[in-house]
Image (cartoon, rainbow, N blue to C red; front, side, top):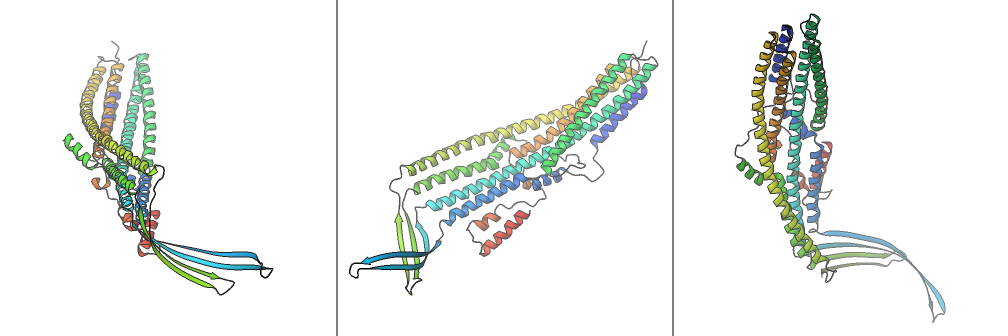
Amino acid sequence: MMNFGIGQRAARAVRTSFLALGVTLATAPLASSDTLADALVGAYTHSGLLEQNRALLRAADEDVAAAGAALEPVLRWTAGITQSLGRSRSLATLGVQSSDSLVASGQLIAELLVYDFGATTLGVEVAKESVLATRQSLIGIEQQVLLRGVQAYMGVIEATEFVSLRRNNESVLTQELRAARNRFEVGEVTRTDVALAEAQLAQARSGLASAQGNLAIAIEEYRNVIGRKPGRLSPPPRLPKISGDINASKSLAVRQHPELRAVQHQVKAAELAIRRAEAQKRPTVSLQGTLSASENLDSSNFSTGASIGLNAGGTIYQGGARSSAVRRAQAQRDAQRGNLHVVRHNIQQNVGVAYAQLSSARASLEASDRQIRAARIAFRGVREEATLGARTTLDVLDAEQALLDAEASRISAQTLLYNAAYAVLSATGQLTATGLRLPVQQYDVTEYYNLVKDSPTVQSKQGAQLDRVLKRLQKD
């Protein structure tokens, strides 16, 4: 009876290659390597998206300064030179007289808002709420950056392990094909067995090329997110601590998620904007003082003057524009309230989805481990049966492919598990540099605000300090 099984040499090659692969995937590299924490530090410090939104926060801080400046005195000046030319005729003298004068004048005007029914003060409060909302949006951006950093890190690890798996598979099948050809030459197997081994090897090479392409893509994503090309990456650390109570996590997310907090501040800002629009319909009272001087440059004539007055005024009719402004503010408030409702339920849904994905990934990883154990036992059994002639080459190749698929499933399941775990942190608002205890210099959202909130001038001490802060930010 003709033996359709693989030889002992190929069998030993299969056993050795899969043992080497198991060691490669299970052990940590001996050389110094980047950890997940290192990658997240890189993502935090490299992110242009964070820099963009920090600048937007500083712009919102300046809105507070601009709104508050309306409560401060306003000092203006005007100056001018006037050349007057004229001719006049007198009936008494029956002559023509010419007049020519050059007059220089200047004014210094000071104005101070005394009372406007709180409209300006409410504008300051609106700007402050917008600042608080923008701060929370910045935290949301930080979460996005760090989650993408986790995904980029795990993506490179996954792609690297796939390449290693496919390369080992190619090595095994190359040896199997060599053994099949040797046995064909001595008449132990048919040409069909050789063709099957050739087809399987071609498929393995195709899979290796695809895995190498995916690794190149993962490296480019890592370089974009982390800011540098990945070196040797350490195996992922222990999973972060995740609460097992999904309802408690939903409650936590509703209390502290930055996206929800941002919308809450936007609702409050919209409510204050209604009161401001109503106050703007009322009169304003202001104090104005003027110093003036005038000199005729063609003569010795010179005059000065000063005045101070209390002014009150308001608009009687403007075509309904002010009432429209109030209604518009009310509509915007209603829109923000509706958005708050949507965001709250979306956050609760996102927490539930994240927990479901985490549970699914855990189950998939456990199933993959069981699948690998069973596939390895089956492969060994089929291989031994093939040496006795009870199995064909096709049976061995199928068993080997099943083991390969099981190993690949475990690699994907592990990546999904880590991505899902950090997605839970993001969904509950805990995926921040502070929450992860990353060793980074965190951006102080209050430093710039405290310097600009009182609208300092360039010449003031506070203005000089602000200038140093701006230079440091530009340098960074």
